Image 1 (tube, rainbow, N blue to C red):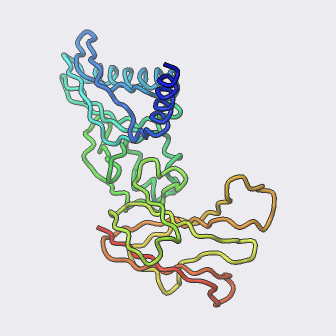
Image 2 (image 1 turned 90 degrees about the vertical axis):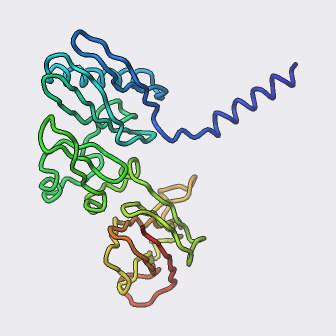
Image 3 (image 1 turned 90 degrees about the horizontal axis):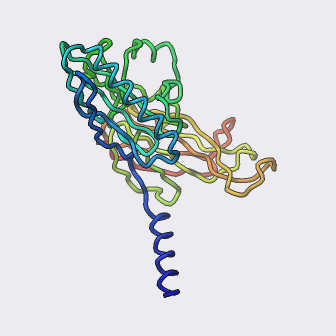
Length: 282
């Protein structure tokens, strides 16, 4: 009996730790409130029950207000446009005297609606591109409404706004790939608009770091910046500790790309090491 209990406990612990939840759990919730009837989204399985309640209250309030604005006998429905572990997007629809739509982007961590500044650098040309219109996230880009209450029928591909992405947060909604030195010379197939983070060993305190070759910046390649990452359990106050340079980039066009990265001091032409990576972008 004792052995059985121990085995059961070990199996339970293994299952909990090994299970990877790749999406938010979005359930259909039947709403029947006076003249407003239909299905609205409801989340379950959120890490904090109070956050979960906050999200569901937000969604219900948005659906009821949209139904009220639509007028008459209203049928409510919704479409999930993006579902990720820490965020999701839905378009609510209310069909009554008129048909109205409202997009909602939910941050599962905070329990609130997503803020644009958390994902994008709000530069003038980006603001002009969006033009203050409501949008939701989708698999391939932003879906925009032409005006308040209109359908989200205009697609703005992520490839068109790569240069505005906040790299620290955009991996929450975009497809990303981690590449290391072990795959040098190999080919990574990926879709247009995907993100790549290339991890290469470095020690910037020596003056050396990784740079893409000046003779190898093909059209369609978009650099999204670099970061330096220290190994776990290393005292960050100690100088001269080696770690990894992380190079972030993406592609705006399909094609075959051969990228050469050089380890060097930027003020010299001497290259200490070069590594080549191939990408097949569809």
